Image 1 (tube, helix red, strand yellow):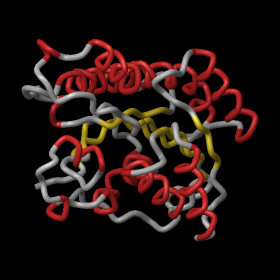
Image 2 (cartoon, helix red, strand yellow; image 1 turned 120 degrees about the horizontal axis):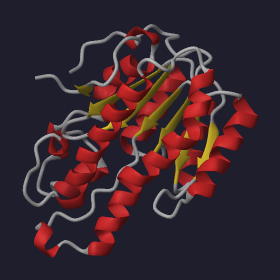
Image 3 (cartoon, one colour; image 1 turned 45 degrees about the vertical axis):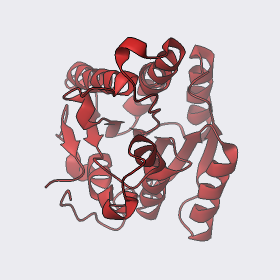
Image 4 (cartoon, one colour; image 1 turned 180 degrees about the vertical axis):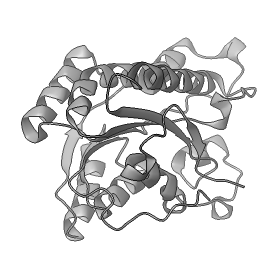
Length: 248
């Protein structure tokens, strides 16, 4: 695993937005950030799941979270402008974004890939990130030091057959991260990096590999060190990098 021991209050007084915060890695990251002192903005499409995460944070006595239900598949420019306005009115700034929400789509040859599914995957995995970054970068610029963390994949670095729109979307994610990192490096306080979680015990992984024994895989909790590292002050100066959560 990525070797990093986070200070207990690494993220004290930080405002961090986590997409796909209702379950899987997003849920674990939100809880981990809250445990380390952050006020977490929980964004996802299912309010009930977000409320469950909110309740855990509340029960543990972590800083009070905020809930933002948003279906990234159908979100438009107005929705992201509204999100930015809400966060500005509530917090005044933003210290970090974890772009975690993703759709897997189909595991079929590109030759027969369903066009509607392709469009949906690209909307959630790429277009929504573009729109969210555009709307929220002004809030990140207000923070003393801010971090945008993307979620990539090994199939976004080297394509593999039958990974379709998911693979293509992760290549786009890597490109967006690198482009933003280069654009913002000398003009702002914002750093941009990406994390490849690797094979992790999640519902998406089970959907991609239904025959795999999930007990052989690391849990989302196991891979959190890199998520803390890139969101905290110890990663200042790290920009435009794509890091593996699981280092073999």
